[in-house]
Amino acid sequence: METLNDICEGIVAEVNDGLGAAVVDLDSGLLLSVAHNVPYFTQSYLDAVAAAAVDMFRGKTVNTVEKLIASQRGTELKQLVQEVQMTTEKTFHFMSIVPGKPNALMVLITGKKANLGMGWAALRSALPKVAPLCP
Image (cartoon, rainbow, N blue to C red; front, side, top):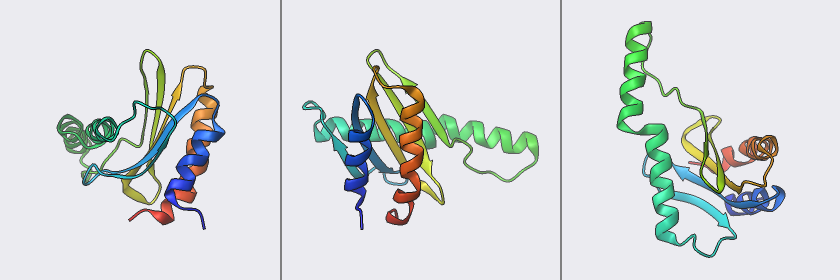
């Protein structure tokens, strides 16, 4: 049976210009798994990126907007953000909540030579394999 580390390593190898992949616990901000091929991705760097991802999905302003939407729609409060794509000067970041595991987030980081569709396809195809391995 594949481990989370195996899945992360596979997705990095599968995507052209793949740099790193990780699974983040959105409750604690801890990395459940990570694989990368970048020397400067130190543990403190990876922890900072994981914390930033938690803010994007569960941060104070995101929670405030979700409360406003629930209030305006007259619906129960729920976490609405499911996927985020972020672009930096030299990288693409693909992030998705793991289906059935609302507190687990999978992240793929690529260089800009990567095809956006392939990045999303690789991330989304890995999600069903990741779900049973997440708490």
